[in-house]
Length: 122
Image 1: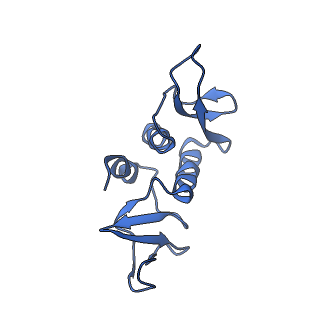
Image 2: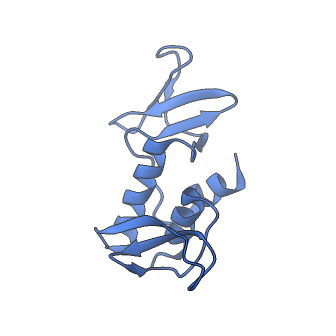
């Protein structure tokens, strides 16, 4: 499990959501609507609760992580935004509501900004 994935799972607002992709010991699994996983590499041979790490490179998993951030902050319009304005800050990702940054950070990746926001949630 990567350090960033470990930090995400450790957050108070973390939970597995339908469609998240899980990686464990080289296998890839998708979490279903009941909160269980099924392994993609070996059809339905492993049907149990997720215990690996979320695949933060997977777009659907990042979308679910964004929803967790929205819920934790009670900000339904929060989004991950790339900033590239040399006049104001170094380029990077932040979580924003409208045009206003929530965290005021420049994370290297969208996933990192989402995890930072979930960690900092009230």
